[in-house]
Length: 249
Ligand code: BJW
Image (cartoon, rainbow, N blue to C red; front, side, top):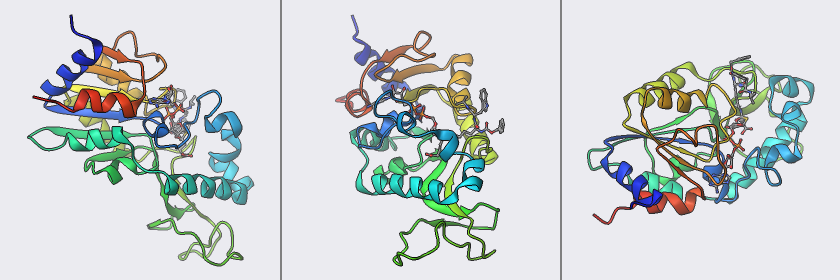
């Protein structure tokens, strides 16, 4: 009889079009905290309503900016893990691989994945909260007395913010459309390290199940998709992905 790992490896080997749908658990083994894990998740320590909403930024921009600077330092000091690398290594050989990620750390791209749809933006970029054009790499100001948040070079207001999607903000419709199309056209979706509570992102996995796509889940904890998944693997992304994606054939 096939083990779940063997079954997952067979599904991954056969699929021509694969979507990887990833959440914070994907980068947990890199050392980047998740949001909702009971003891180690960011929201166990910090209140998302005070930090990850446009209202929070309007109320206390410095508090929000400092929270993101703290998180940027974590992202700068960590690196993609074996799971990110296993996904990136799968590209080529005539296979179509799309990574749809809720993560803002940019680690899939750093690992070498080329088709990466970032639903919730990129924490290592800045933009103006009032919609002035342009997205810029986040840099650390050298002057300790520089205004916080920084001043927008276009409108001159202190409205520079991280290029991420906060609660109550809409996702980039073009990115979401491409993600939906990738899910509709795939043969297999691999859902990794997400609690599946944040919409519309989680709706992509719902759609995949509704369309009867082959479905693999990787997570130490069960989710709302576990029972319907073809294979539900309980474990860490950095350990399981290399086992199911590295073929010996
Ligand atoms: C491991 C592991 C290991 C651990 N290996 N796995 C429909 C119904 C209900 C509510 C809504 C709805 N539609 C919209 C909403 C409102 C809201 C929402 O979803 N709220 C719910 C929480 C109730 N959504 C929005 O506001 C979105 N916008 C929107 O819908 O616009 C239209 C609209 C506007 C106004 C009104 C109504 C509609 C925007 C959502 C933006 C989310 N932003 C954040 C922050 C990004 C910036 C930042 O980084 O600070 O995105 S919140 C946070 O959650 C972050 C994540 O991308 C997202 C998802 O979290 P994720 O990745 O699942 O992480 P965790 O921590 O939850 O789970 C980690 C998992 O990993 C766990 O399962 C672990 O077990 C596992 N794990 N170690 C593998 N080693």
